[in-house]
Length: 108
Image 1 (cartoon, rainbow, N blue to C red):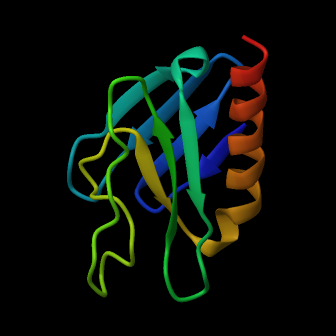
Image 2 (tube, one colour; image 1 turned 30 degrees about the vertical axis):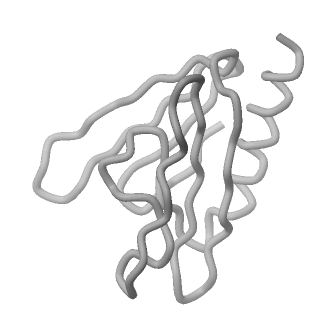
């Protein structure tokens, strides 16, 4: 299950969540999170004018807060390795991915 984000993708294979960020002109970075280690998820659906985000919370870490300002649109900072901004067209896929991760968390 893959979700195309603004500058990368987030995928879930049933056990691992992989967030790949590839900004223009920079080398890509990949972050892997085991679904059993996720303690919470956050999904802010995008609107037609502003991007949303999907975020995963891990034990011992605090969820990155939303930045203010017109260009950030209430999303966590790009440097947060556990979140990815999503466009409006990816809302449905992101909701399905978050539901699948939540289900995998509850069956551990």
